[in-house]
Length: 266
Picture 1 (spheres, rainbow, N blue to C red):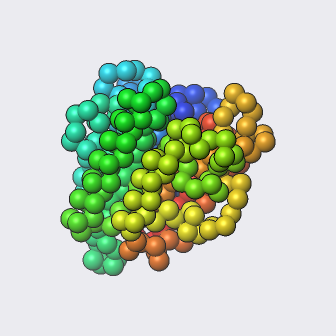
Picture 2: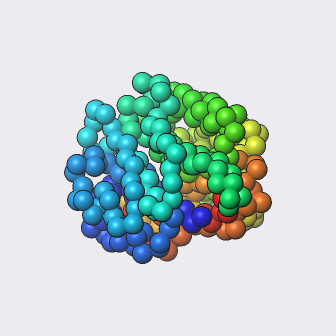
Picture 3: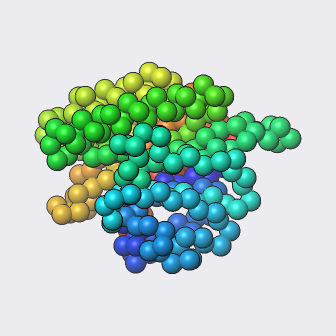
């Protein structure tokens, strides 16, 4: 199963930059976007339902041109059901999350599993917004634990908006008091790992430096590789041995983030 995830910083802008065309050319089984900043009716039919794929969208319920996520699945892959958000009104209004559930195929020896695409809130903008981000974090972990207890293996991906350790950003000392690298934000990732979910890129590349997924465009940080690794694939512990490859596609342009890649046998 080949999966690609990308914070596109606006799907319509990404299309103009050739990012969507690049994605279609990868022939991924599943690809997903965060920060789409669009409702489906604002997109062309070719974007909403490209040939060979079934798509799922969530978007902000109030503020237009903000947030939003999308998942595209090859039409040959059967989806059991889709869920949008957590079922918590306060946290679901910005259209930040969706989950697809897949049945086990006994004939193929596959397991039942859930795929979650989430655009986690940014903690900037004052104490209230940071508190909102932390509430979202706690609700998310409770949600995936509920799914796992129902017997599903779990893969989740997205822009987590936090670099976990010092190796995950270029300038850790300068950012220790800034959102995205605050101890309280990083401690939540510790909780996720303690709950037996694995940051699969870091597991595959434990000592790799300079591996980032986001760069500030205003300061031309990408050219200098002054970045942050804030986009992740996490897998439940039972899937680790099934992962064939996990990587960052840092050469791909079209956003202030780059795509990330996972190949896993399911």
